[in-house]
Image 1 (cartoon, helix red, strand yellow):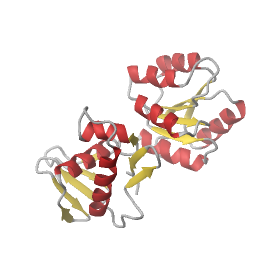
Image 2 (cartoon, rainbow, N blue to C red):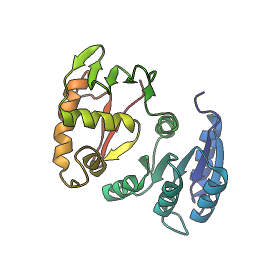
Image 3 (cartoon, rainbow, N blue to C red):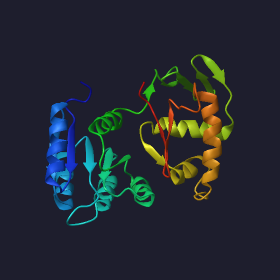
Image 4 (cartoon, one colour):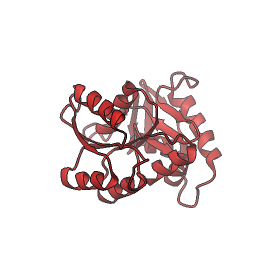
Length: 232
């Protein structure tokens, strides 16, 4: 079982949900730390350095966003938000603050475990440094020559399409907001031109997806952004 020895910090103040998460994680071989307050969560993170954090935002002693910011000041540990706050603004705020993924309650445990597995493993496989290639699924990129092939077929990408693909690969498995993508691909002067992202994402899908209308790689997180699927 992949990542069976990983330590997961569960930050949840609702006892039934906490027990449910512990049972599911235990059954899948993970080691579980539990915190019902932000203060304990930050203390356990500092002391135990878990491999990933599952975090509810609605904590009794502070907003869970404080935990996200605390962790991000210290480490790049994967943070998966599980929250009843389903509005888009809350999701975008959490992701922009550094969370890696966001699930709205109620959620399926199978989906949570799948996203946890993605968060725990390296997002992309690097081939030998001498070859300088990045490979995910059927997609291979040679950064030195900017050559991109899909299932052995070379595809031509514009400079913006290429930069967009590389950002997605670098953060494979993580939800990226429109704002994050604009900053990474177009620069810090951009933040509101979300139509740029939609247009170029559609073009990129047409070039790398086997069936663009049913994406295998680039998933849309409605109202939030996009995620690159690294799992076959």
